[in-house]
Image: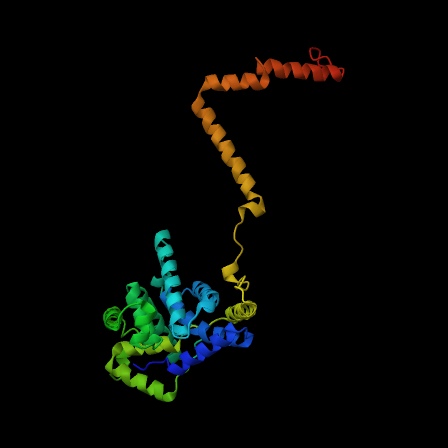
Length: 200
Length: 139
C-alpha cells in the first residue's frame, strides 16, 4: 500500500495557511481548493455516498478551519490532518442524527454504476467501487474511518492515529479488522463482479 | 486523483495478492470530485476569511449555499404570533372542556347577559326598529 500523502504537501498547506493569516486571499483560496477534494472524498465515503451531505461537511470543515486559523500554530498538527479530523467529527454527528431519526441508511444502498461509463471495463470498475462502498457502510464507524484513510486516501498509520486521536497500533488493528470484514462481505460477489475471469 | 501507469501496474499486481485491493483500486479510481458550486463556495469563504484575518477580525458569514439554506425563522415570518395564538386557543378549549358546564354558564352570562338568546333577540329588535321593520309582522 503506497502512501499518497507527502511531507511537501503538509509544508505547502502550512505555507498557504500562514499567508492566508496575513490576509493573502489567493493563498486562502488555493488552500481551500487543495483541501476540499480530499475532505469531500472522505466525507462522501463516511456518509455512504450522500454527496449533498458530504458537500455540507466539506464546506463546514473549511469554515471551521478559517474560524480557528488565528489560533493555528506551526508546531501543531498538519492542516490536512486537522481537516480530516474535523470532517470525521462532523460525519459522526450526522450519522448519529440519522440513527436517532431512524433514517433509511443511504449507506445500505449500492448506487448503480454511472451510465456515463463508456466501456464495459469502466462500468465494471464503477460496479466494484459501489460494492465496496456498500460494504464499507456496514463496517463499524471507526473501522470504516481507518480503512478509508489508510487504503483509499493512502494516509500513513501515524497520520491516521493523529486524526483519530489514537495510537498507531490501534489504527493497525482497526484497518486489519476492517479489511477482514470487507473481504468477507465481498467474497460472495467476486463472480458477479467479474473476478473469476481474471488471472489470480 | 490521477494515477500513473506504474501506480496502475503496482495496484494490479497487488490485486492478485490481495483480492480486496482490486475493489479498493476501483474505489480510488472512481472518487467523487467536488462540484463547481462547492468549489466556488469554499473559495468565496476563503477569500472572506483572508479579508477578515487581514483586519484582525473573525469571519462573519459563509458563502451562500446548502449550509446557509433558509431556516424557518418564526419571528421573522410572523409564524411565531400565529403559533402563540393557536396555543392560547388550544389551552382555552382545554380549560373549557375540563371546567364543566357551571363555569361555562358563568362565562356565558358574563359575556352575553342572563339569557344569551334573549340578549341576541333584543339586539335584533333594536336593529330592525332602526330600519323601520316590525319583527312581529315581518315587513
